[in-house]
Length: 265
Image (tube, rainbow, N blue to C red; front, top):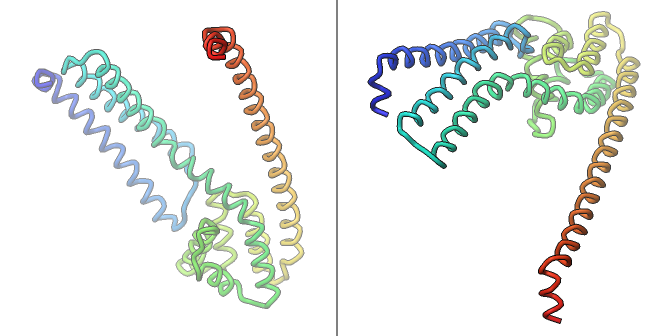
């Protein structure tokens, strides 16, 4: 390992690794500044994801090269060499693929959760509007008591309230902006109906009822398909288990296990 550090290329390699890490830190800082400038959480664009993937590949290659060179310089062989190669591969996959794609995975998971919570939120808004409650008051009451079951929707509503106060816009218009930034189509349509009704001064109950019925039908259909897939998967697992069990019993009888049983009898 000391010989590796004494090579003429060691300072240049160290500078390249440091530069890759600084580029990754700068990209993360740019993402935070982008969110702060917009005031709401934005979807990750294609250009931004390309930059994340490129920087991630550079950092991953640098980390994997460091591990491989350290293993080669230390002269490890056998199991230690295989472990070093495995660690280098794991570092490459984590830094080059998992970390750059993390915003996309989190955004997709959040969209799924928001989509499932949209019918309950629509029902809450309809009941609150039927009681002649102001939009800002009903949104504030929705986030007054934090609940883990509806935490993603509460975070979005809290973000919309903050946006309404900072930009001096109507509450439902701010809700529409926050929902559109998250990329949840169903919630965006509902927020658009609310924003239009708020702007025109009309009752949005009819539009909310139509969206609620459509969304519940879609979610019910998706739930039915999910149950069918899981039932089919369970049947496949049971069938494989039965086949493996039968083959295991046949092999036991046809080999020395059968003779042991006969001898015991």
